[in-house]
Length: 259
Image 1 (spheres, rainbow, N blue to C red):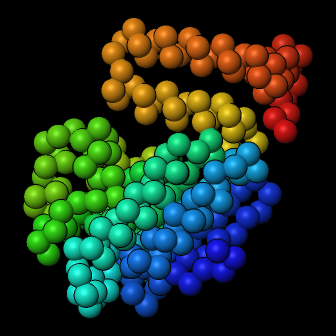
Image 2: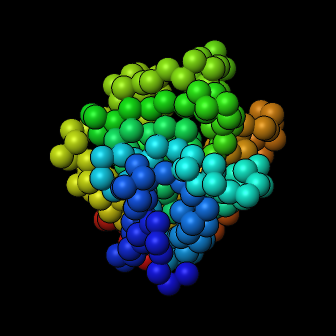
C-alpha cells in the first residue's frame, strides 16, 4: 500500500511514525485500519527502521473496534475474525521486529486500543489518557493480545478485574499497575515520544531485537533453557559488527557508531 485511508505512515531516517487516523470515529478499528496497520508494521520490519512511534489523532488513542462496522457486516463473526487476524498480524510483527515500538497514548484507549497500547515495548501515556477493556460491556471478548500481555504485566487477579468489570484506569493508575512506562503532560507527549524514538535510533537495532526475543522466550522457557538462549545470543552479538563496535568504542572511551 502506497497510501493509507485509516492511518498515516511517515518514515524519517531510522524512525517510523504511525498514526491511527479516524478521529471522527474515535480511531475505531475497522477492516481497513487493521489491514493497513498490518501492512505498516511489515514496512517497519526491516534493518532501515530502528524505532516506531504509534499514536492516535484527535482526542482518542483508539476506542477499540468500530462497532458500527461490525453491526453492518453480512456475517459479523467472519468480519470480526478478519479484523482480529489483521490486528494480530500487526501485533506479532511489532513484537518480533528489531525496531522498538513506542506507543504514545494520547487519550482514551479502550478495547483493542487498550490491547495495542500496552503491547508497545515502551508505553508513554498522556496525563489525560485512560484505559478500559470494555469488551464484555458489549458481549464480546478480548483480542489484540490483551489476554496474553495483561496477566504477564499486572498479574492474573488484576487482569481478571479489568476484563470482567471494565474498570477504567487513569494514566496514573496505569503507571502504578505497571501497564505503562511513564506518564507525561499532554502537551509534551509528542515531543517526548519523538525524543525517545531518536534515542533508540542511535542504538543497535539487532541488540534491541535480541532483548525483545529473549523476553518473549522467557515467558515459556525454564531456567536452563533460557540461560542457554542467553549464552548463544550474547555470543552471536559479540561476533556481530555492532557488538564489536560497541565493545571497541567503550574501551576507547568514545561513542559507539551503530550504522
